[in-house]
Length: 122
Image 1 (cartoon, rainbow, N blue to C red):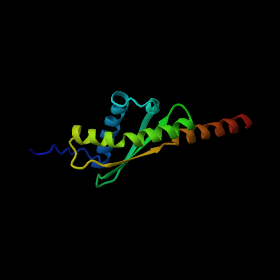
Image 2: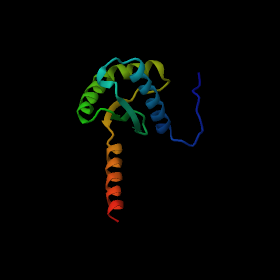
Image 3: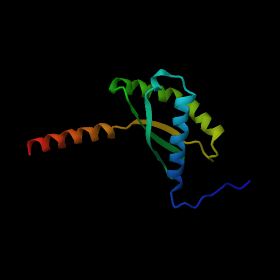
Image 4: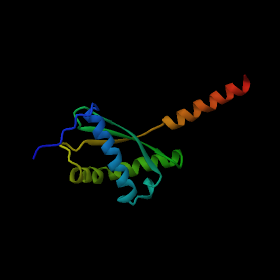
């Protein structure tokens, strides 16, 4: 059976990344009962052009201590997540998954604080 090849102008690696974020987010909320993952939110992906490796970025609502616990939980669940990707998604390769904490929200907050301080002094 022929695969459905979309001509959207969006790179395939980006489409796969968007699909992974949606699918893994759903797994985190519905299929994984690890309390370390309760406050995890996936924010972005970076999928190599060959589709064999994907980095998934996440944030945690509960602070830095739970960030390390969440990373341990995500690493422990990686095998399960990859097996579900293999079964449920129509991908030629199941990418190796790497989870990385996304510190962009903290950096943005810090920049906003600095700008507020400058505005108050001016």
